[in-house]
Length: 360
Image (cartoon, rainbow, N blue to C red; front, side, top):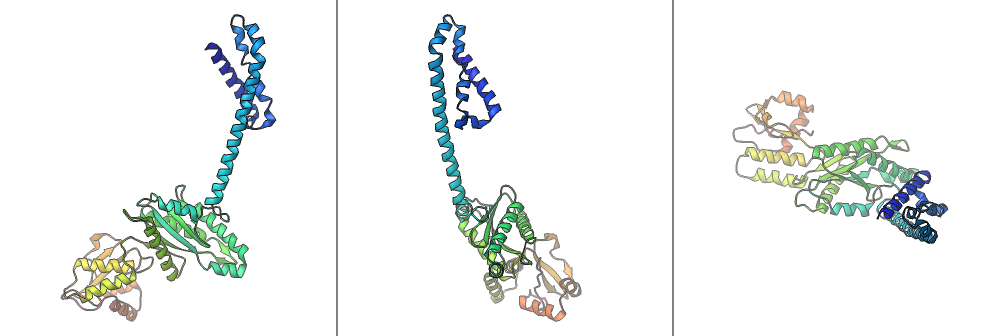
């Protein structure tokens, strides 16, 4: 046991010296074959400390040194093969899950990560506006450059725990975690602002974006569909903007159906009805996140419902003149839009105009 401990210590000492002098490649490159005899040179000399050690060393020193060197070289072959295998596997994985053009993760990786998403994770679908015109006017080489620059800008605009993917020709996706809706919106907006610093043929590059958040018990594919639908709403609303799809939020068609159902009901609208109408109105406007609903009551406008503001504002009265200044529209356009929004009023109120909302 003492001999083994001393021999082991000598091996570690000499190996450490060789490592510091030549680096880790000394154990993987055949150029350093001579290091093996050096490392084990003192291994058998410890036998000199024991009675009859000199004769024992003369007998076993060379065979033991040869066996140790052969063992190290055999281990070198095994480790080298394993290292090359791991390098090849890593390269193949990069090729399989990274987009070759932009260097970000590809659709295959996105699908894998999408299947593992938990409630609270946020999905953002992004599309480069008018990208086909870039290819048609400037050529595909310039289009490829734009794609690379957009991917780089998105990656630099995200946090370390977020991920960016190229999921189609000019379409990208983001997965954000650990954020609430407001923070997710801010991160996405930062991405859009960063891309606006890019240009192609003298034209500013812009993105349209659709956002959704995975809800408890909701399949991630459903959240992806909502984000994709929000992206198309952003495109239809003029591009270069973010549209957020809140789970349970009414679409435009659903909002119209709820409004018509309320108007057809043989009863006066309640406070809950006004809140539902406001929710439907805000949800049907691309990009809208907050709004107010005023009902004309005895000459003044009464704040009946709000979204995105404090409830202490409810019941606040405003004169028609003050609201006209706030909405800054001509009188005819303001009155016409108000009549078009809703034609029902609570009992005892003036039938014009019952509903106005401001996009925020």
